Length: 170
Image 1 (cartoon, rainbow, N blue to C red):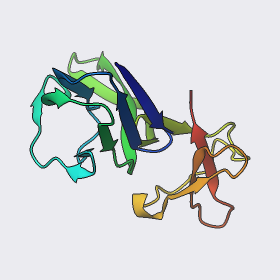
Image 2 (tube, rainbow, N blue to C red):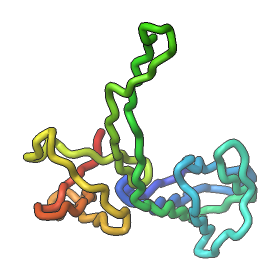
Image 3 (cartoon, rainbow, N blue to C red):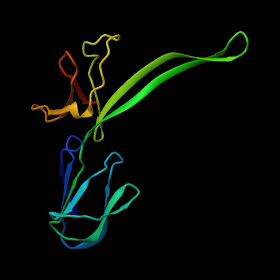
Image 4 (cartoon, helix red, strand yellow):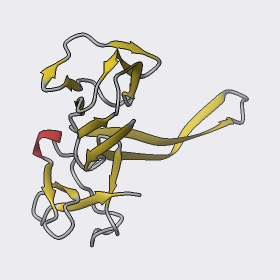
């Protein structure tokens, strides 16, 4: 029995599994469903599987498998923006003994992911550290596929400048 996997994952969300088997066999096929995947679709021999057993992060298909069976799973890869703040509060006491808390550092960060991949810029991209980039709306971020290698990059719009290009960080 042999499974053949056809996919461009993690750059595309479609995964196709083709079975070659000399004789039928009954077993459970467990497909890992990543935690970031909210709405995946699953097909068996071209038919959508509406209800699939799930346990411990896996979709489970229990059946008698035959030569030529095809399982197709599609994980949508939406662009997501993640916000974090690096905050440092210095705590001390005033001369009279009352506690004092003073914010000495406050940096806001944003990260972009698409499916399992985190995207990053190669360099500061010509920005000075004192320049501010306004946070874009996620809907404005464009996925552009590089024609030379087929790897998607993200184009983040920036007012008054060319888009900030982000590439998979791996």
